[in-house]
Length: 259
Image 1 (cartoon, rainbow, N blue to C red):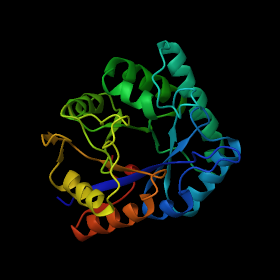
Image 2 (cartoon, rainbow, N blue to C red):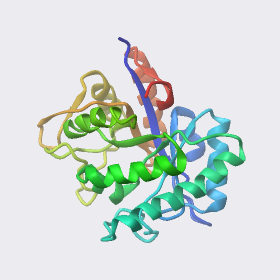
Image 3 (spheres, one colour):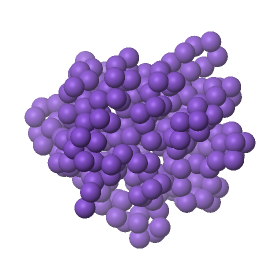
């Protein structure tokens, strides 16, 4: 069977007069976008502009909610209760969906941001409660989570409940021996060699795994590859990733076409 993978990017992270990312360029090489919803980044004008940009480039749109942490860009853990987290997420998705529906489109997926994303990897019960609430409010959209041995089983369990899970890998990030993302506080957390990033992307999809920062092989199942628009090398990396995948006979398509 021919392999298929989505390429996603976090977008719409500018705020007021502050510009973050290379959205206008990187959007040309991705199939799905995770648009910030105002808590960790973005504002109403940026959200509307980013939605239009995605539509113009035939890129599917997903919500990218995070902790209410503009100063820390949503990368700091916040000790808040389950109800607060669910309400934060519903609020942010609702804001983005308004702009999406303004242009006659619908949301493809949800991807949590930063510290909230990482927290859910080890808190499946809470993640399921979030999923249930989001489904009630917004329908059966796709939910992205980090692709690990553990989440492969989580995806199978969710499929029995008609929950759509897409497993994600990060070719421009190093991994711990446990298969999680190496925290950004470490100097080798983010990779900047475009050729290496593209090579890792192909390996992740074809070989279903990657080596950790310490050289340990980590098995993974990959539905979507994330690249980072705030990484200055992201545009060139995005080009090389897409070309490298296609050269290996791997189809690049949005999640909604195969999840």
